[in-house]
Image 1 (tube, helix red, strand yellow):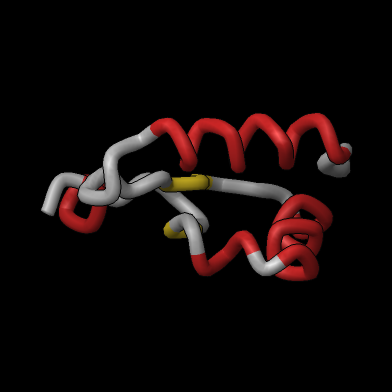
Image 2 (cartoon, rainbow, N blue to C red):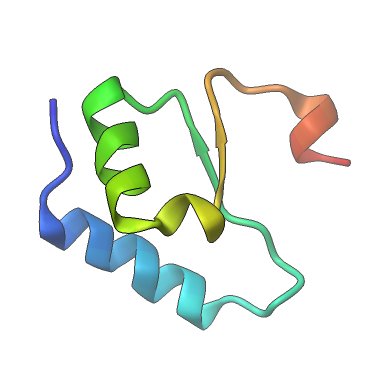
Length: 59
């Protein structure tokens, strides 16, 4: 499993279109996807969780 540049572009585009008070969550990403997100610095633009946790997401 991996994330191609097209997938990363979709995330960047979505984040750009959201208002600044909206958080983007990535839940349950495979290690290869996490690595791509980290290598590009996008981890500073989203919240990455290993599993869905309503107390974190809905806080």
